[in-house]
Image (cartoon, rainbow, N blue to C red; front, side, top):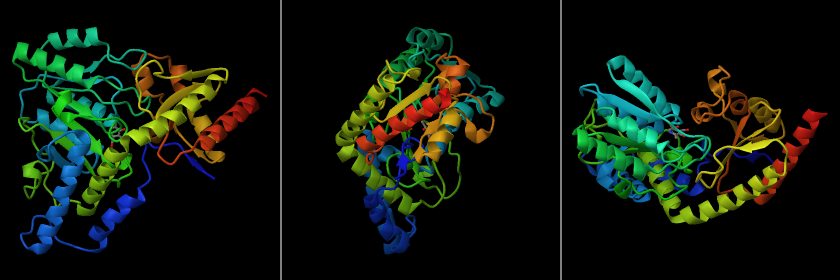
Length: 382
Ligand code: PLP
């Protein structure tokens, strides 16, 4: 049986989510903006989903802006918060996802000063450096992810928001905090109201929902310019007819994630600990971010003597799907920017393999993985 250990890349669609979506694919065909009964039925479904997604993240329904996924949410946050503003500074964590990193970097060309927030060898924010950085000048927006997609390291978003707020008060600069919670949602509790972030990105396909739908949570007072102009949907923040079936699926997935969060997290953590115990028994294994709080489903490691992509392909031939940390899709063969951002040496970063577990994985699959890994190690050594 093939083994899927790549849930941080994407999750399978939960059959209950598909069931919730089906009527909106094959049934009512109204446009949520239409005033007649077809339109009103679609609008009701979109609004019910809005409440479900808000509940997962501890937000108000009115704070949810539908998008096409995490990438668009990050773009809307960073581009939308800087468009038309007098350029000052934008900061982002050195281990952020490319959806944040590349969007922030693109702002350089528009007069913004763009700097990275230093991350230490455990994958955590270097707080004294961050505080000093905040004191150096005005800030428009800082981005810090709730949890890293490669290492699973969880950030103290509340602390970052407090520092940004305090710096903003001192300098009257009105700095904002964007939290990319794409990987955290459905794996650890989120509280948009309490954590102090002004903007938060979410994506349905990381929590057993459909691909191509996400949300940006936005505090009412945050001024944003839209990326997509059009029919005034989403209170003018995102023009375009809503993806009704996708949104209904996201709502259903969010509801399942909220009610099943503890059980899912406990299941994944037990498997991850079994995996970690097995890996510790193999010589030459480094587990990244191991001393930091991490997502219960995520473990990234390197095996001495193996290059990550080579190990990924060897595992694939054995029917096991994992991810390597390197940017294989770009064809550049560059090691993971996350591990380099943590200050780890390039040769170690080249070896990175990420295992990301899900609700359907089993202890037998972990045991099989460990056996295959030991065999590959032996074969390489021979
Ligand atoms: N942010 C993080 C932390 C992610 O892990 C991902 C996807 O891997 C994204 C953003 C992009 O989300 P999407 O695939 O929905 O565009």
